[in-house]
Image: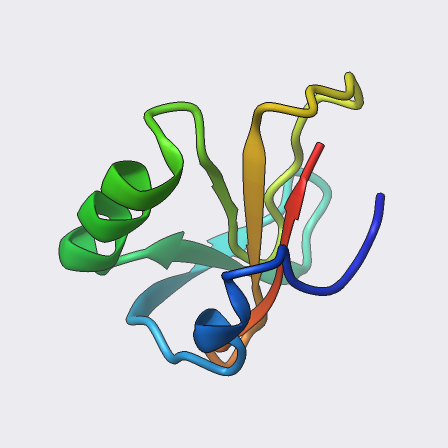
Length: 88
């Protein structure tokens, strides 16, 4: 996985999006926080900008390891900031 920003996507660096969280009890005990993107306007804007195959990864999200040079991936941290936009 590469990190950083695609050419022309640098304006997204540090952009803040809305996340919602909930606590989840694990099967064998313990707690974890589950993150969910709660910003439909951001999702709509990214699909219009990068195409319907764009993937938006919030903390704890997993994606397939296959590489597609035509698919854009967007990473968001726990604070809701965009940290990377790359193809793969």
